[in-house]
Length: 115
Length: 115
Picture 1: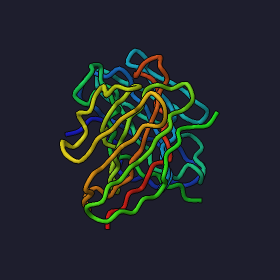
Picture 2: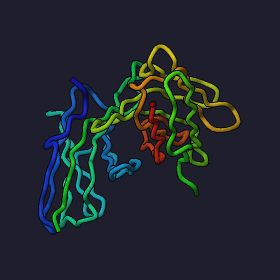
Picture 3: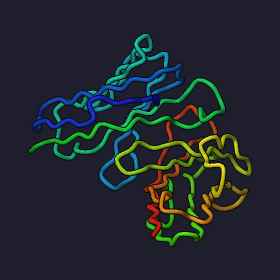
């Protein structure tokens, strides 16, 4: 199966609540990135976390990385209606070639924030 | 500083025709990546190019697909003799010359529809 599988596939919460999405991967990575995609639009980069980092913050976003479990989580605090989108994690392999030069994306978590 | 630009945004072709998708990376970026996204799926890596060089094309279908990134001008993804299964959103991303293990900046995508 592919790298970067997000969980859950869909998440619906009330505005103001926190949203947590998880991502698992299978092989050694150089970094893991989270992206947001609004319906029918391009991807917006949110956070990049490198394999030697454990946690990163950006505004209302908090990303953790556990390389021993090969997993990452994205936490959005105090959610807003505008946060409604699909969220993808993407991994960058350690090695070159064989597709490793590009990012490997999961299928995404579709987040709906109810006003 | 303009972001990654792609054109056209929408492209309709009949089976058997050729499709040409263009991508202009961000100013100062020398690494270009092409991805394909099928409905309700994550992005799949296709090819990684630097100026005048294809670095990794392991994600490209063996036939009908080609990519280039000339010394001057945009990167081109070319699909010959399109079939219905080629209908998808094609995204281009770029990253700076510091290395491929950086965040990738995505364009708005080209949505190809094959009739």
